[in-house]
Image (cartoon, rainbow, N blue to C red; front, side):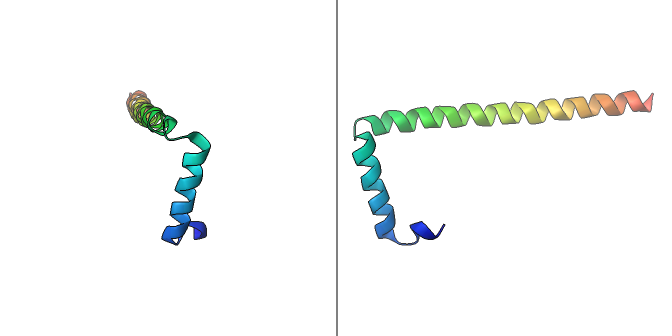
Length: 64
């Protein structure tokens, strides 16, 4: 990402985010983003496990 190559660019981005959202809303936003990421990761893990289970069932029915 060529935009964030220098520390001054990152600092400018942080200032813009604080101005747009306000310092009071940032912790709440970060908390809800973290919760969303945890839910997303657990759903992805569950989907992978379901895929493995269905693959095992398909292989078991072919062997009979």
